[in-house]
Length: 175
Image (cartoon, rainbow, N blue to C red; front, top):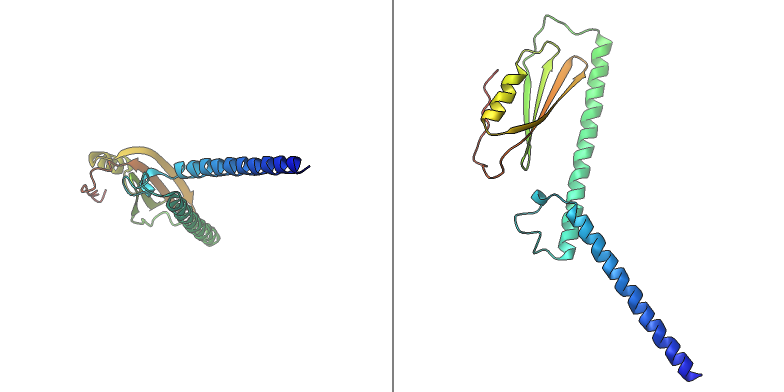
């Protein structure tokens, strides 16, 4: 009877070890999948290869927190834009005689450049000139989106810039 218990106990130990080994393998695979989802520009050059698994998970958590903060900021801006649109519709139609100077905003996310042009309904600039300037300065325009909120028009230009030429400065003249 002792022999059966000993064999049974040994078999349980082997089974527990196998289960634990499979669990560790599965966790390692899941960690690798998570780290592979993080864009390479989030890591410093060549850092991804030398980080421990714990460091990689911390980098992933940091990246997720950054994304969460960006989403929250976008939600706030959306609410503000909707509130501004509601205010402008309550005030009546926008004045067509008044020209508003366009507002130009730049944001750089690694090799991605985002240009936001905000203007009135009577667009007093040439969008193709802005695109030409970006392309002349080395950017490759990927997409242009247009949104109308109240009496404002938002033009969003997404472009790729060469990450190796950080010394290049975009100079835009008033168009």
